[in-house]
Figure 1 (cartoon, rainbow, N blue to C red):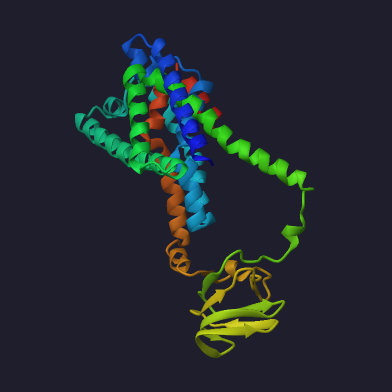
Figure 2: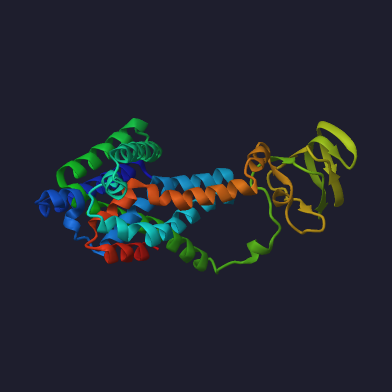
Length: 348
């Protein structure tokens, strides 16, 4: 993107956010407006605001980055977040709204009649808030730096100033409007490129031949074999080998493997040139990148994610959603418990 266009786009979003927040300020008149938007936010608007929180830098940028770096296992994060709203729907939304409390510590003290629990809940709210806020500011700084070349701190400062101004001036009502606006803006930012990609694909005759071709590497790749595997080559392939292939030891030698089946010893590393077809595991038909061979350095990361770690991640995100203060507090703005539950259904 042209740098001047990027600056204009960022400025436009900042101004639009400020104007939407100012509209909320115009209709905020009472203390109840400031804290809970007078508990008059309908399910659709509230759901849009919650979804705006959901499509934060953590999911809008972070999940995409995690999938790119760590692989598709990271898709369990958004799955866990989404499933967590079921917990909110069943156990949290209505009781939280019926309590009449303004904050989570208020709710905890009212339910358990303990000032100590209130203090503990306050500590958790502040801690979770910081853990959630810092990555958001970091994401804003990195985004502005990539788009415009500006110092990373500038993006964080701009976001902090805009958010603090909206919260201090208009309170919950302003933030509700801003979050709903941000949701539709970010949803558009996701859907418009996808639409143009589909149109470009159709304009090119909707080609499917590329999907039927053997997988090929777009750049030089060094892979490490976890376990001994037999690979099948449809044509000769020149690779750089560290380890044993077909029983012969190599130490950084360039070896031309003829077409056919070859045995690669576990622990061996293969340097595959750009454009080379990805070897296929004998018998399974899968590429070896999906059957025991991983990019160099990634095998360790894969080993650190056993099945119980995946289940732990799902459970943590599933239950953790109901502990996010900035999400849970939105149920205080619903007119009643039924509206709070309807809000969760609309979010889902």
